Each structure stands twice: as C-alpha cells, then as structure tokens.
Amino acid sequence: MILDTISTSTPEVTQEVTPEVRLLTILTSEMTRQQLKEALGLKDNEHFRRAYLIPALDAGLIEMTLPDKPRSSKQKYRLTDKGRLLRDSAN
Image (cartoon, rainbow, N blue to C red; front, side, top):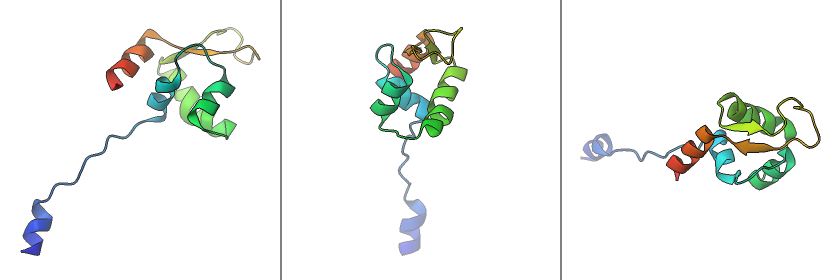
C-alpha cells in the first residue's frame, strides 16, 4: 500500500530562474555594473561577472552603452530587444 502511494505520486516541478533572467528582471533602464550588482543583492564582483554579466552579453540579452570602451568607468548596460522579449515572456 505504501509502495503504491510512493510510485504513483508525482514530484512538483519548480521552474529554475537562471542568473540571466534575474538580471533582466531588475534591468529597467541603463545601469552601471555596481547598480546591477546591488539590485541583485550580490557582493562578489567576479561571480557577478561570470554568472550574470558575461552570459547575458554573450546571449545578446543586454548590451553595453559604450561598446568601444568596455572598461570605461562610465560604462552602463541596457536591455536589447531580445532581452525585453525574454523578460516580458517570463512575466
């Protein structure tokens, strides 16, 4: 009887939110790296860069406001059309 119950129950499926999707949900306008990191509640620069920023840039979900100067202190990031579509479909 107990084995029948265990084998017929179905596990709940939880949708995992990737770091890129989390980034898209907080990026509402042009934001600096520090603003993005703070909005996500992150402290480690390298983790933010590797897990959030680079994957989102590589996927074409966000873009730099100064693409010719990636290390500029005035660098900001904004959503691309692709990023907006993904963000809107996730909501």
